[in-house]
Image (cartoon, rainbow, N blue to C red; front, side):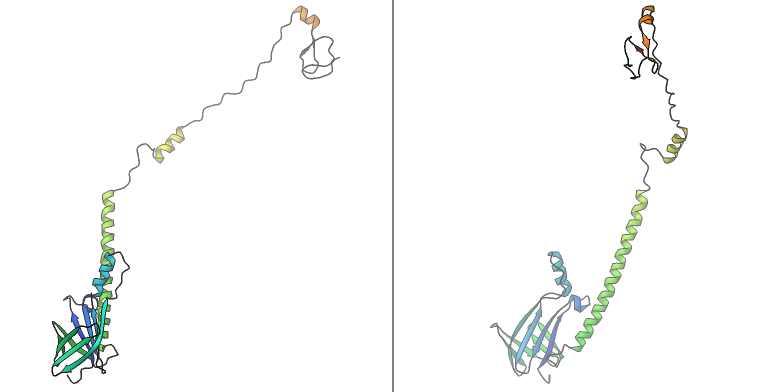
Length: 229
C-alpha cells in the first residue's frame, strides 16, 4: 500500500445478500496524525430490528456499534494499535488492506472524512431491493388473506331463518286473513219503571222538568232543582 491513512472495512457477510440489512460491517480509520478509530457493528440491522420486536421495544433498524479510539504505529509489514482503553492489537499489512487476527480490513477509501463511494452505492442498491421484496411479500400476504376469506364464506353457507320467527310471506298471509273482532253496539240503558200504588198516586207528585217523583209540599225538585208549581 502506498499510504496507510484512509478507511478500511471488514464485512461479515450473511451469505444471503443485501449486506446493508443482513451483514455486519466493521470499520477502521487511520488518520494522518497516527490516530485510529475502530467501529465494530455488534449485530446486523435486520437482526437488531428482530431482537427489538421480540423484546417488546420499538423497532430500531440502526445497528448498535462499539467505537474505540487510540493510536497506531507501523514497522515494516506490522502495524500495532494502542487503544485508549488499555488494550493492544497487532496486524499485518498487505497490498489490499490489513489482517487483524481473523478479520481482514480492506481499504476502501483514501479519505478519512467522506464515506466511501462504493459503500453508498451498495447501500442504495440494497435498500431498493429490500423495498421491492417487502412490497412483493406484502402483496402476497394480502392475496393470501383474501383467499382464506373467500374459502371460509362458502363453508359457512347462508344464514338460515330461525323456525320460531315466521317468514314475511306467512306474516302477510296471516295479516290478510285476519279480521278484527266486531264490537257489539252499545245498548241503551233501560229507563227505570215506577209502579205506583193507589196510595202513592194520591200522595206523590212529579217534576214537570225531569219527571222524577217529589213529595207534596216541596217547592223545588230534589233531582233537577226546578221550581215546582
